[in-house]
Length: 525
Ligand SMILES: Nc1ncnc2c1ncn2[C@@H]1O[C@H](COP(=O)(O)OP(=O)(O)OP(=O)(O)O)[C@@H](O)[C@H]1O
Ligand SMILES: [Mg+2]
Ligand SMILES: [Zn+2]
Image (tube, rainbow, N blue to C red):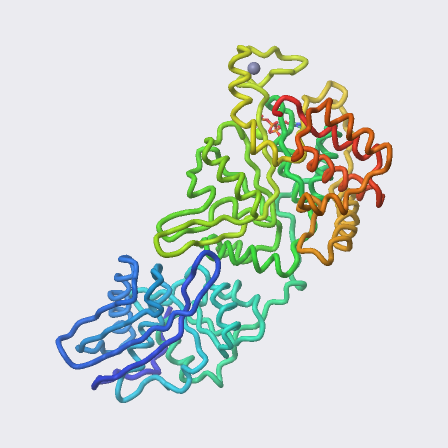
């Protein structure tokens, strides 16, 4: 990038001088203000960073020094102290390079930065040795924070423009190098800010190019997916290899409602904090579909690291978390998952702080019924010893299974189904029913903080899941036959609520309860 030459080489004559620049730090997906205080005084030349910086941030000093020199400016041979306030929060990442450099340059005499323009301005960005401003993680959260704090404008790295442009009501100035940043500060009034992106103008493309019409047969599984999409219920699929489990899971996003504006911001914020936005994927518009391998580390899956980063469960926020070969996930991973499912967020504690990431996903778990995969199959014979089958199935029994509302066996297709050339019902058709059912729920729960039947608490179930007389009789019978616990009883009622909504019925009838009971597998109780 060629650098503009509007700034002359300046002989620095820095007596004791002081500057404060507003910048941002990231905790989880949320941001907080970091005031960067720069003090330059006479004394032995030195450059000190204080305010609990992560050791990696110390490299910032070298980048700032080189970037200033490469921008045809003299680096002061004085004592420079930079304090990152508040000092009780560990600062990590290269976010502070650009504001530190601007803070140092603000102390120059004669002045090369118009100090008055720093009022109400936030600055974030990494610097390269050449003075180039590099992209950073968390820019969307930073812009949201700056706006909330009443800032008039924010300077960000040019490559983070797409995510930043989602926010209206604050002037955003993308810059590609240090010289450009100085020019922007000195000419704030004359430089046009970034244009706001209007989300409705963006045409969405189904990149996966998959549809439920591709899936032959599997009527029970498809019904389960429609119920799941309508009431946000988790699914467990058990079936032989090649029965279509992965195929079904990949199609769930095609029948989900589009993300709302708030959801787009929330999901993009998570991807931004995780550094997962790139040129092709600069904003998250479609419901995420994440399918981490069972060998993924707990930090990769749940979130973690010395400065915690969101894991796969948070990258699946407002979308699908597909866990294939579910039995292969380590026990402790499944236990963490259980908590995440319950509270829809994950909290990671570090010595001084805890970091919270949202993780409101729909879980789609899939596994074989036994180690060889063919237990219960009507064509291939299972070769496993009974002991091994029990051991295999016990890997996912217990508390985790208790939270999965829809459990289904996915049987292999028969010859007629395989040979069939008829297209099944399209995702678009199914989605229309999902949409109607979602509307019923949002009307019913408009005064509550929930959006889906699966979110109902026990108390709310009593109020919203009333059954007719026949339904009550069936439920009484089911408690005995299926040995329903209080928790699984609630689960059946929630699924029955969604089934009744799909049938546009206010009351939960016996037929809805009978269908809900179909989605319980005795294998894993
Ligand atoms: N119901 C179906 N309709 C059309 N094609 C199917 C169906 N089921 C399976 N197939 C075909 O078989 C392939 C394998 O299916 P899929 O990968 O979904 O099986 P799976 O149940 O996930 O198996 P595994 O247990 O080995 O993971 C699919 O890519 C598809 O071509
Ligand atoms: Mg599969
Ligand atoms: Zn087997």
